[in-house]
Length: 370
Image 1 (cartoon, rainbow, N blue to C red):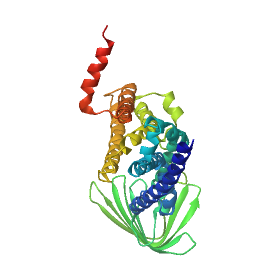
Image 2: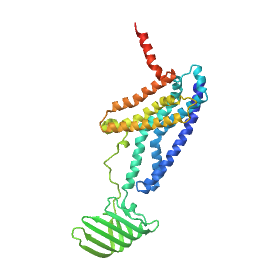
Image 3: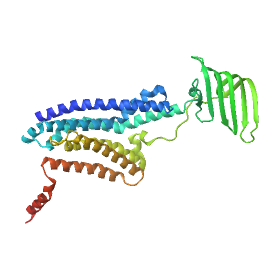
Image 4: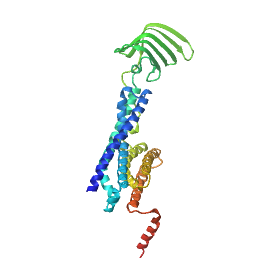
């Protein structure tokens, strides 16, 4: 059908352009945020682009939904303003007839959003968490950077190396401050090197001085040495017992249905349902009067998008806290918005007026009387 094909063609152009703009904006914002986290020591600076890619991939379900929503609004609004929709409506094509081509165009987007929300989203969150934990739990030697004070993984040591020899594990003017077992120790040396011994990995210091103070008795002990060894950590990382719920796969959530897992499932399934509901919402807010300001429906559409996603987050928190059940939130939130969108769509399809609704109901009741 000509109407359906022309509508889908314009939707594809608008959706592609909108998605490119949204991804570009999010990538820029994510890059700035990731660089800030890397400067504060949350991620390895060399992994900035990797973390940015995972983060953008995690945002992709929301970006696809927003891109589809904007594409529907911009396309249908243009058709209303240029009276194309009036021509189609005069030929018997109402607002309900628009839903079918929209759903035919949008079902691949629904499928991608579902795959991202249920499969890819926990995987990307897990990769980001692994990169963060790996950098936080890196060995003491990897934390040392020339000209900077660096703290060890357990917080008991502070290292400083003025300079290091390129390509080797040696450094000059080494300073180490240690607090453990009720003692404070300050060790300085002209140079040091890393050696792998049977007892572990050690930093061997040469030609230095060691100052040791007891925190209980304030006893001070100063000694000089030609060579002194300090264990600087182990090769392997410690296992992390806590696993964030957003990194668990959907099957793991279904196997252990706790409140927190129900809340995470409501978020993932909610991403899919919101993409469908926004198709109906897009049709309802696109029917505008040409005499009204051009930005009126766009402002309302943006407000509706932000408001819906805030409700989705609030529903997730309510389930996690035990205030509401999973079925209650899904039925009231997504089911309620679905029914409300259909009612508004029916009103505009039949051109009903709110002030005429009581009289319309009375006439229908009268026809039902015997």
